[in-house]
Amino acid sequence: MMTIFDKFQPLAEARRELEQGASNFFNVVMEEIISGTEAVVNGRRMILAGSNNYLGLSFDSDCIEAACQAARREGTGTTGSRMANGTFSGHVALEKELAEYFGRQRAIVFSTGYIANLAILSTVVGPGEVILLDADCHASIYDGCRLGGADVIRFRHNDVEDLEKRLRRLKKRDTNVLVVVEGLYSMLGDRAPLADIVALKQKYDAYLMVDEAHSLGVLGENGRGLAEEADVEDGVDFVVGTFSKSLGAIGGFCVSNHPELDLVRYASRPYVFTASSSPSIIASTRQALKILSARPELRRQIWENADLLYQHLQGLNLNVGPEASPIAAVRFENKAEAFALWSGLLERGVYVNLVLPPATPDGNSLLRSSVSAAHTQEQMAHICKSFTEAIG
Ligand SMILES: Cc1ncc(COP(=O)(O)O)c(C=O)c1O
Image (cartoon, rainbow, N blue to C red; front, side, top):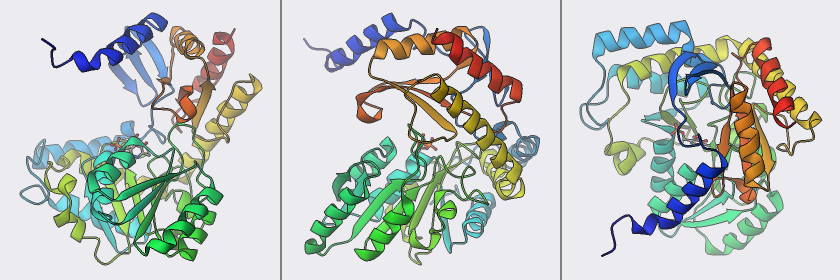
């Protein structure tokens, strides 16, 4: 008789193949976390050059202190949904602070960024309505689209002409259309052409949601993301983001000026049917949010590091993403070459992420590095030198 796992045979084979290419691929354990940029991995001290800890705030002493105090005061978890016993005063305060930071009327906090996308996309658009999403959007955006039952149409990554063609066709349907893009795309680190997209959404009377997961804290004078940098915040209806990158914690949010945003709280299963974030997470996130606008030097530092690594990789003639960004991706058509460089970097004490199809754009294999404002000059020099040596 077939077992319940037989359907995973293709996956099991792919895993065996991967293990041959890089024996330690599935066994990476962060055994000791030394700082936001260093850990002991499989017994070796490594520079972390693949995390999303863009500003290094997971180790900020004020954030840690805020988290410890909240845990002592309010316990380790809320043990309930926001709709039941899980709304503490910290959740409400964080929502107010997020709304103020973004200059919006409304904010909702979710337990993760993944859940924020599921909640918003499965609720604000539904059957008979249309979501037009950039093909390179994150899995959480795809999953949110699937959960809600709207018609989902992809447009080519960052291709404004393709988007306009689809918007023009949809005009005949006379229905609500939500365009969904990211600020900085998570795999290649490139920006959306947001000013053009806002112009189109206005021309065709559509709604626009921007997932600023990777751009919060990184882009814009105050760190509010690509919409701030491109000076089009008024043209964005919903900003979604996560606390798990620049803010160094875990959680997600949506901010909007729409007066009815709060209805999502009642209509959205991913909001209602999961426990709310623990008090320590909320407290460290509130502290980290203050730092985003108070310490612009962190943004200057991350861009210095980003430019340095991008130029170095370009100088090595590697196939990097289209623009310099804290996410520095190297693309390979051949998986084995990607494995070899990944393993070579590990041997030299540098940990980056190896990302394989189908999680990558264009079916390429990717080495996805990311830099942090917390990487020191010495660490950056070691990362660059390791790339040079590992490509041989
Ligand atoms: C663009 C984007 N949106 C959402 C998420 C999900 O965020 P979280 O890790 O908070 O669930 C990610 C995570 O990598 C992401 O890259």
